[in-house]
Length: 580
Image 1 (cartoon, one colour):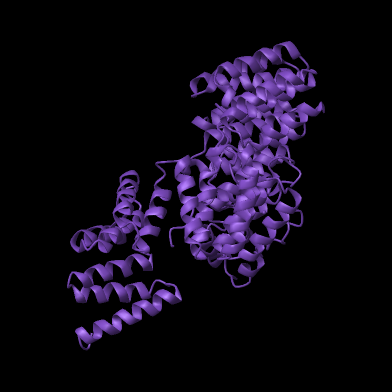
Image 2 (cartoon, rainbow, N blue to C red; image 1 turned 180 degrees about the vertical axis):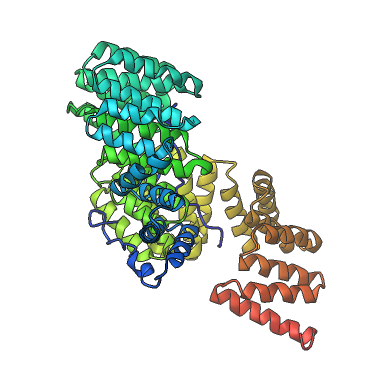
């Protein structure tokens, strides 16, 4: 069956006004298993000798989303033309977005001489001052920055933390009044004031601000709940912290940070402060701003702010996790792996990072390394439901369906603690694997169990219906399932193909052709869909078009079995239409 089960999807835990996303399902340096490959920029640098050639190579590297190589080429270009401010600004942005803070800092110092209001250059300089506890100088840098919408948000938050560094809490509060202009700005102000009071030792004021943030919507925010729970634990109020965590986990039962915090509270282990220094607080501010910029249009700025956060707090797992995800979204899988690998496996986010490394390895056609990585994770965390499912997904992707079935089964044995909603895709995926190894009855049973959990899940309706159609079994019932799936997901080419194929099996060739033509439009790169359309054309007496579709299907890398079947049909067609 070609309709593959989805991988565990990435989902966001919105940090209320902060908006930073973490990952629902989630790898590799030596801590995760298989070694990662590192891109060797030097391999791209050998061939370019001229100033203009370096510039063109940098532009091409940017087109290819290879930021490290682009930065290296711009660096070469600047050696030839050090006064070119356009090139310098591009080099600055690339060094910052590649995590080379010191190089970005050197560029920033030169840039502001000719462009004194350059926003990011000023923020880099301000960040460097905060690292050196030069809070007055940091504010002076920010004062000279042009105030765009998002930069103003960053400036207000950073300014508040610089005042906190000087123990001037009233000034910190005044600095945050401008946040009211932003959506959820008051929540963000309350959250950071709670952190500032907490860091400053004013427990009563901190608690009030934490409660204010919760009432403004922070009960659904991972960072706010984690920070307030951390405060309660340090106040020796562990039972209240557990209640807070339990309330959150009712909405997000798989959140690893809150689950780890809850386990710690139950054991009575007092944690370190959530914000241990002014630098860490400023890093949290940048993380908050990056959350506001979580769109394709502002992804570059998110990356820049996350690297500024890492310049202040190197050990910041969530920042590296988000950077990995942003690179993965851009299909920069090697770069994504490097960021994910910076998240220690011992951190609550470590298993997510490991799973995302495996997913990235899979995209790089390094499936054996992905499986090695996930097996290593499962050995270390045998009770981890998501790790088991991810390993099973990886086996299935590699066509190792017997191993996939075994891993899905072990995941289902752990599933009782996860709740039924987490199980439908496991039954569905195991059913897909059973079908591939010819265990049709077991596949059908799993599809039906998945439908018991999610009766209107179009993927499950489609797979069950198609499995019946493909076997020419209960076709009228299959047609009803597929019509419902198509109604729920009208733009899914595979579901529309299944519906068309059901009509084909029932002899409704005209209607089948209509649906199968639409399916090919929606999913033009699938050989099976073109093969089906060719069959429908043949039954309709449209022999030339049938031949075209079968020939096209052969160009789309079909399975060996399908190749043989199509070639047989083309041979039969040649007898009907000689010289075709």
